[in-house]
Image 1 (cartoon, rainbow, N blue to C red):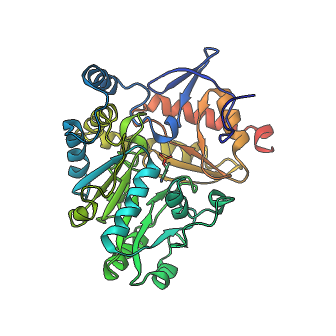
Image 2: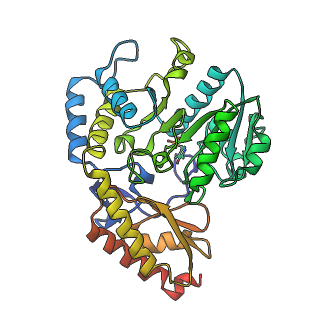
Amino acid sequence: MTALFPTYKRFNLSVERASGTTVEDTDGKSYLDFGAGIGVCSLGHRHPSVQEALQTQLNAYWHVSNLYHNPVQENVANLLTQYSSGDQVFFCNSGTEANEAAIKLARKATGKHKMITFNQSFHGRTLGAMAATGQEKIHNGFGPMLETFQYVPFNDNETLKQVIDGETAAVMLEVVQGEGGINPADTDFVQELERVCQENDVLLIVDEVQTGIGRTGKPFAYQHYGISPDIITSAKGLADGVPVGAMIAKDKLRDAFGPGSHAATFGGNPLAMAAAEAVLKHVFQDGFLQEVTDKSNYLMDCLNELIKPLPVVSSIRGKGLMIGIECSQNVSHLVEALIEKGLLVLSAGPNVLRLLPPLIVSKEEIDQAVDLLSEVLSDEKVSAH
Ligand SMILES: *Cc1c(COP(=O)(O)O)cnc(C)c1O
């Protein structure tokens, strides 16, 4: 018996400590971490520069509220707006909260409430973010959903064009769907989508909670597509494991979030901001994202050569260090078998193995991970499961 709600189906691993790309369990066994806490520990576990920033902030102050100025918040907001199409930032504590802020801002700024999202999307678990999520399994038992969300097919603008109208406040999308199975959007689709939004005076929100902060080799994944979203949400990889969320928006939306309109007690917490500032300085420094891209190309080449030909594998796709290996079967026993061998990976939907290694992963560690994947995915006992 446990005093915790059984909301998570947990693997048989109890964590003792973690460092860099390595997690160690309570029996002293080490694991190579290609999940990074679901894309959260972007610089690996306990990155020295983040640890130092946290230590400094621990010695200064932990919380005094948003009633007073916090210079570290300003620094993080400056970095986020410098590297994105946005002009100002609202800080909160999670991806869900960032999307809630985006939904509320879009409603308030436009005076409209209809929103369009995509099948297989994932935007979070609160009532608004859950309603935005285009997956029935996330809605089950929690209905009725907010009725003003409409779901349309991903990578296909035809239905969207029929549904979008003068009542639509915003369209929200992930340019690489994460939880929905690692589905990258087509460039034509995204550019056309932006054009349709502009034509209809509809805001474009990009959910970069999983794809942002260097995960795909750009500061934000939408930058692969040559678009300029009105609102961007960020969370997971932003503070290397300290809870944080951010909603970044263009200047034209500034006045809709005036004093008293929205708030979060813990939003922009000094510890989270100190960690985020250290992460952004590291990820945005010259050359870092080029290394991420190089390692991504190397990992993709290895996977295409050694993993793609295996009978159990049906396709490999992704962007940067966000990669899905689609299998012809349910992958949960494969994840278990990989943990047994000392490699932590994630799944995305029933049939996709998901790799989100820390951005600081080395080529040697990529080789090790590919070897372990090859061993487990070519094991006939496992793949015949
Ligand atoms: C994880 C995720 C969320 C939800 O973030 P939480 O921090 O769990 O609330 C929202 N959108 C996307 C794309 C995500 O991957």
